[in-house]
Amino acid sequence: MYKRKKSLLGSINSIIDPRKKIEEIKQQYETPIKTSEPIPTNDKGTDGDRKIVKESDGEYLYIKSSGRWMKLQLQEVE
Image (cartoon, rainbow, N blue to C red; front, top):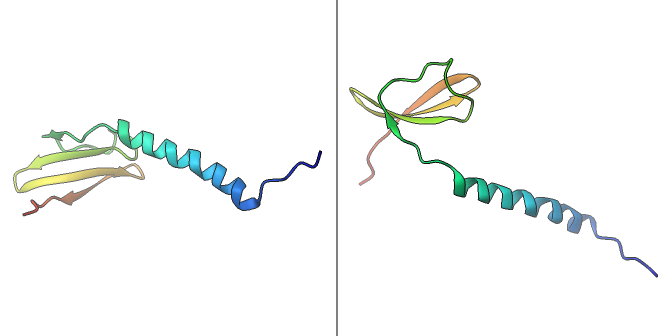
């Protein structure tokens, strides 16, 4: 008749585990980044989008954040 209550830590873990599994599943279905030519404009895409763009002086990774595209130059790893 006495029902044992879950501990606070047990309750937190039961909430965190499904979230962790959701993130793992999202990563499995994430689409690969493709190389493209045109530089993206701020009116295109949504926050979190990523693109690799070939420019005359190298390849850049563009990431959209806060409505703006940011870029990082890519280097080959030897």
